[in-house]
Image 1 (cartoon, helix red, strand yellow):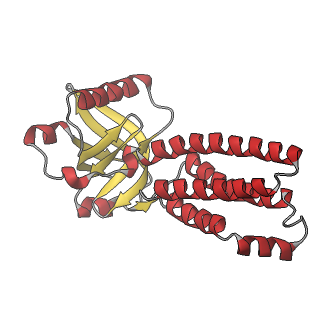
Image 2 (cartoon, one colour):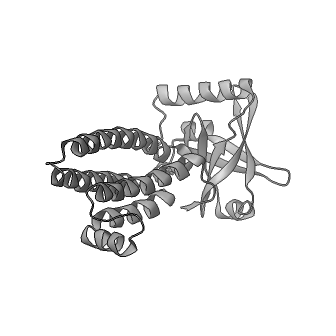
Length: 243
């Protein structure tokens, strides 16, 4: 899957990964293992404890590309940073005040990491990043419910909803239609609900050779959003899920 558009939540998560590595470096500074302005001391410290830097790099790459494995890498990264930082805290056992301050920082790190864990979990579960093409063979009844179109000023091409949530959807299309929309960014999702035509504006945020992930605009017409939310609730409640 190719990611075309990344919301600020992804960049915030990547920034937190960098911050967590800087957090580890700060612990090394508090333990007087290196000092500001001492580049050689900093490099020697990182060389002595390379795993936090390694896990930060892998987590950044996998998160930026929205890989499913990025969650496991993030957990490994947090465990690594916490373990090494706690080890450095024990080195300062004789300095009571410094140790108490470092334990407070560790507690704050765990709480913030837990918050970003849930934030990233929600991001990865978005329909616009999850095509779920294992539902390629659909029951005719379900298929008729999921028929939709992608539309802009130039094109209006048919497709099938293969995943959806309240903020977006993934549309499976033939390769010819996908190629025709390959350079399009802003698009409208059009479908018929209870004999009413619903048109939701959004932007393409991910693409496959035969489909697109659409994230709806933050500001939608209230009536359109209410109808779409109702449609999602019906799909989830009746068990017409995408597996």
